[in-house]
Image (tube, rainbow, N blue to C red; front, side, top):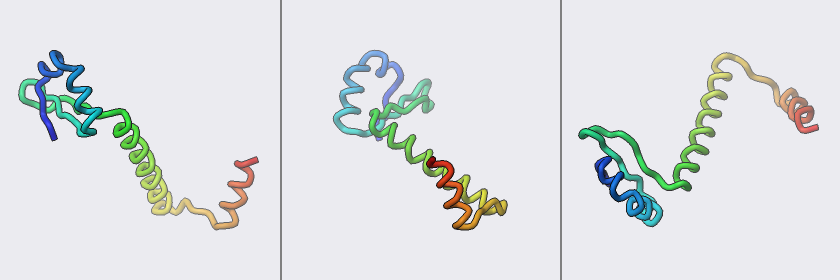
Length: 85
């Protein structure tokens, strides 16, 4: 992964954005020697958001099972049928 200074971002934003679009590789932006932000292309960002949402749903499901908040197959079918009306 490439690392750039925040001053490089300020001076060469158009070039950095073109590089991200072309290479599809994130760029770590540092400020005062510390990580400050990542620049990623839109498609990668949206994919990451989608994956995080899916993982959060799985985690909620696992938590529900651990807490005993489950339903039978027939109960689930009834709920879905009502929801789809």
